[in-house]
Image 1 (cartoon, rainbow, N blue to C red):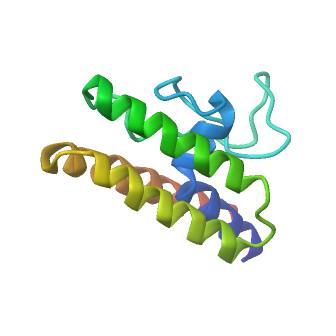
Image 2: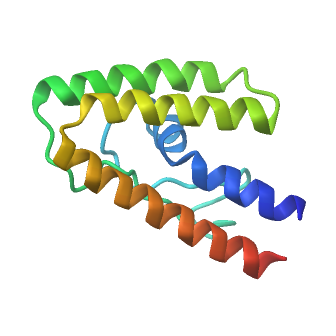
Length: 126
C-alpha cells in the first residue's frame, strides 16, 4: 500500500519532477521519478513533461519556466506526502492558467495519461 501511494505521488508530480530534473527549464524531455534511478537501470520508467508537444508562445514559455523554478525551490522543503501533493496541485493550476483552452485540454490529457500509467504501475507493484 505504501509503495502504491509513493508511485501515485510520483505520478502526480510530473511537472515538479520535470522541473527538478532540468533545473527549472521547460521542455528538457523525459524525467526520472524515483530516488536512486540511474541511466543504466531506472527504478521506474521516465514520465514525460506534460507540456511536450504543446506549442507555446515565447511569453507562455517564460511564464512556465518562472512557475516551475518557483515550485522547484519550494519542493526542496517538502517533508510529507500531503505537502507534496498540495504543491503539485497548485503548480498544475498555475501552469494551466498560462495555457489557452485548447492547450489545457492537451495538457490535461497528458496528465491523465501519466496518472493512469502510475496507477497501473502501482497495481502491479502491490
